[in-house]
Structures are given as C-alpha cells and as structure tokens.
Length: 238
Image (cartoon, rainbow, N blue to C red):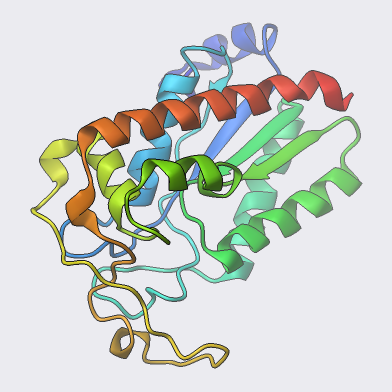
C-alpha cells in the first residue's frame, strides 16, 4: 500500500487491516562517476515496493536526504545534520503513531554510522514515550553483511562498489553510466579530516567492474526475504 497514492478513505480502510508502516530513508550522495546520486534511495524504495506485495503494510514516501560524512565534500552530495535527521525521524514516527499505526519500521538504504545512529536515537526516545509502539531501525547491508559479502567477488566491497552497482544494474540499468575504476578510501584513521576528497577522490569503495544484473537480482531477493522476516517478528515482540 503506497501511502502517497492513497486517499483519506483508503487510509482509514486499510488501517483496519494493518497497523504497520515502513519509512524508507536514503540520500542524495555521490556514488562514483557511474551511479546516480539517488542510489541509496532508489535501491531501498524499489525493494520495499516489492516487499509490500508480500506483506500488505503501508509504505511511506522516502526521505531523500541523509547524513553523509565521508562523502560530504564530493560533488553532488547534499547532506543534513544528525540533529535534523533525528528530529525528522521522531516527528514522522510519532505522528504515524497518533494516526493509529503501532508497528513502525525505519529502513535505510544508506549505511553511514552517524546516519543510522541518529535514527536509532529517535527510536529510543519514541519507545520510551509511546505506549504499545513497536519500532525497528535497520539497514539491509548491516543485517545481511555476510550474505551480501558472499555474493561479491570483491573483498571488503562497499560504497558504489560491486554490490551497489549490481543492484542498480538490476533495478534501473538505464541509470548506470559505464563503470568507475576500482578504488578504496585512504582516510588516515583514527584522525578526522576535513578534506576527505583528497583521500578518496573517486568516491568508490570496491570494484564496480565486477558487478552484474544477476548479482543484483540475488541481492534484491536476499533483502526482500530478510525484511519480510523482520516484519513478521512484530508478533514476537508483544
């Protein structure tokens, strides 16, 4: 059930059948020179459209902006602060609760640490304040790290690399513009530096050249099945 396409009457009708809503979170963020800036948003939203064919739950419109740190200075990235994301997450989840929804899933296609942390902080506040709420924050790349790593031929594959490129090749192949070269960030950890582009000029973490639509399809199915499994866990939390 795509929330944005529903009428007020549709919402009231379906609320009698389900109290579950999914909020997708993405970014406007560089993904090398070969993937679109909406990669994180596109992947998670398209996958969730497939999820709701298996489970009749509400699917909200995605938030296109997220917290981008390592890619914050790269061309095209438009980031927000953790405080902004925390406030936004809190507000939409609380208002969904006030409209009668009780099972709230915050699913992000962006795996940034500060990004996920801000969402989790909002969830912690909500679960302490609102009676009878079930709330989950998850990133498919975290909960399926082992399985997705096994799909890739590239060790330590990550941002705009083999798996993300494969996902876009499967979901929206017309948006893939060739392939960026294999690259890995050389940030001088544990130091925090301002000019991150200096240490990561191409914005790729992995080898996009090893990507394929077939790998993308397998990754999509893994993610769909895991999210469905997690949705079904709501009954166990009561």
